[in-house]
Image: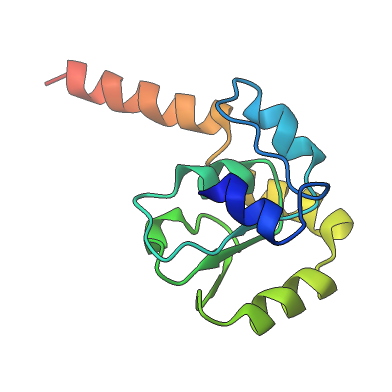
Length: 127
């Protein structure tokens, strides 16, 4: 169905369906921003991964708030005009480092997360 829609809209030169990938962090590093306009979404792991990569993120307001780790702007999925405006005026280059630093300062980097987990295990082992 998706392939058909891409052809119908004449977007075959602009859309690439990659299928399952093992190199998601490398792909995210090539993005300028991340957009997730879902009507229905579970936890939204892709959104968390994009934020961890420092990408400016725009996500549907239907996605659980727990996925908004740093500064993702929630938008209504039925307002394409708002989505387009945000993407046009996004400043990915200046946002990326700020977002990465915010992610780290909230303790979501691997070193902080590992340290927190280790401390939890040590506390449990004392009981």
